[in-house]
Length: 117
Image (cartoon, rainbow, N blue to C red; front, side, top):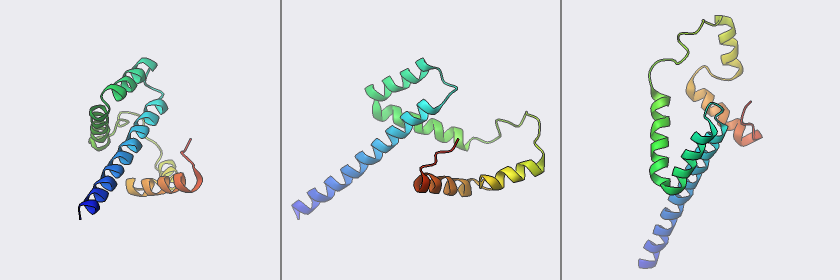
């Protein structure tokens, strides 16, 4: 019984470690993909990811989550788009709902390796 519990513990720890590595690589790719951040800002994030990896990853994920679920639209003060053009773009990119877009985008990443423009 003891060896089974040890085996189960190794499986759980391995899963957690792989999940953590995936999150870490996602944060790094997200940082380098962002064109609005300056190089020193990216360097500070990377340094903190190396020195305090778990804390920095948690802070980054919480910040991203809060920005994702924040109410309002960052573009609401801009000029309105023609409804026909908006509807056409939503259909073209499968963006009628957030879940539909995420499902479509994830499928394209898996199937074609297409990360978008």
